[in-house]
Length: 126
Image 1 (cartoon, rainbow, N blue to C red):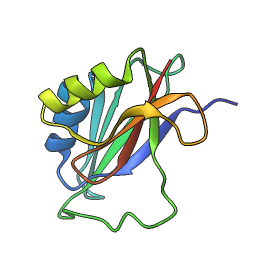
Image 2: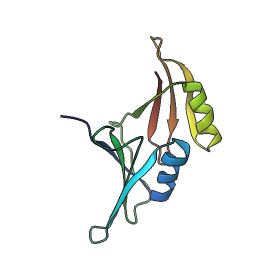
Image 3: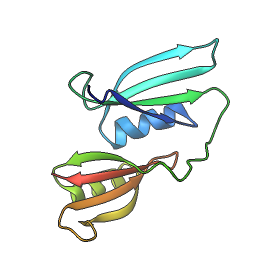
């Protein structure tokens, strides 16, 4: 078994594609439109399946926002330098919500950002 993708419901598909491609450096891998079911999908990532897991952005036509709930945590992305990644994301208009620094009770350097729909993304320095 292998992890293929994570799906996020988004309120504005183009805004989310722009964030994940322009700010986070992912590539738009493919899109699909289902007119009869009133949704559009966009897959983004740092590479394609099966070598890389992808992020599925789902836009349900006419739905502009969602209750994120308390069960969702975050997506994690490995980066070579968390502080530099924060600066690049901030320069691209992204929202850094926790600056790079050691995780509480440990030494691993992490940071957090928030995407345009309010989803948390953890940057883990590797």
